[in-house]
Image (cartoon, rainbow, N blue to C red; front, side, top):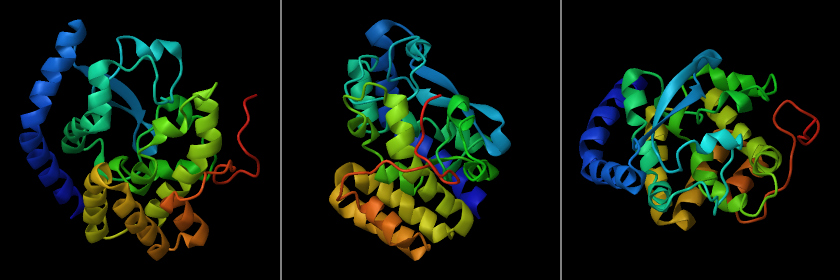
Length: 242
């Protein structure tokens, strides 16, 4: 049933999304005369890399800086890219990967290989399922760029402040294997989140609590209090660079 939902959503989403994707692709191409697509290597099931298709939101060769996390105001983001990121159009193109079977509609977000290399043994369980376009963590941390704004080292702050909670939410999904109904609810909440986070976040927190995530994880999902540094799942200390 999950794969059937993926295929149906992939076909329908790409056909319907082409109404906005095609003009966006042309706009990305016109800004610098380069391909509107960015083919990103990501870790799939078992840690095997696959080629994820994204509508390009950054300058050409932006990844040459070696910085994996993106803060709001990052100079690598183009003016068209700000629109692309605001409305998650770079994620809409990933429906192609869903059709191919590299990804699922709902599941832990695929990570770059450098980040996967930092995973604890506990976090490596995230690689036992297909990565997804959205999940609870994607909704809760949709403002990741704002969280990292002004950070001297965005990658370090990501690993200290966002990764611990993001991984916990993703592991909750992996462990509990929610129903198709919950998957559809998360897809709807992803759309709602772009319009009203005030309505979307309490619903995500309720899902986390219902799945057995506990009060602390539900509170984090609400995002009403400042995030606190924490160790990633399976570690005893907050992440530090060697």
